[in-house]
Length: 295
Image 1 (cartoon, rainbow, N blue to C red):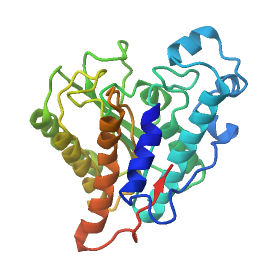
Image 2: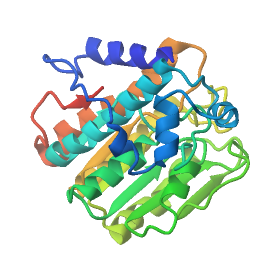
Image 3: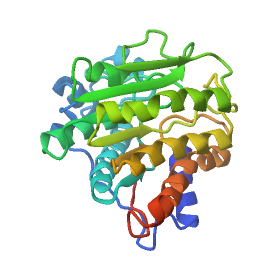
């Protein structure tokens, strides 16, 4: 959990939070959380009344601090999505809780922040078609299940085939990678699908889960990306969206290196890449600096 505050401090030190600091979200209201989750589950989280089997699936205690953290992170993704619609791109310093499904959390994920934000923007009439590009090392199974049969949200997950969860869901597009996949093969698979995907889905907004657990040094990953490979991945996804003038929202997803400083630096690649591409894209600024970041 220390990676979140460490990442925020690192971005502040590098000037990426801007002179006014981070944009700070409101806690996601319960009725907004219920756009993607069942009312019983939402109440169980906030009233601390979840059944023991659900608490075990989440892997964290059903406590006030966990509930507050989950509502804040979801609020951050909602705010980042609204900022992205205004500025072209915005990133949350948390988010990417993609194992949470409608009636339960799982795998350290309480509320599915991307699903909640997507449903809220649609309910407000801000967007119609949504694309979720999930490049965390684990399949975005909760997101896939929430949007199963919903053609207005296209879910893509590129993940390690033999990693958690053992029982996979069916995303609209699943790309399963063998253990040990490195930068070259990984980026080749991404290049083979991303341009056509953006053209075919024609989304009004893209949610990008930039989990860094595909890194070779991640203790819960099974792939072999380097920092350079992650930077190239971020540049491809963000650059492809910006080049087509599609608003894109970055969430940090998973990362489990025991060295918190090294892990925070790895997560910061998303934010650095967004800032660099925004200042260079088409030789002009897409958003006036400082680029907005939600926290």
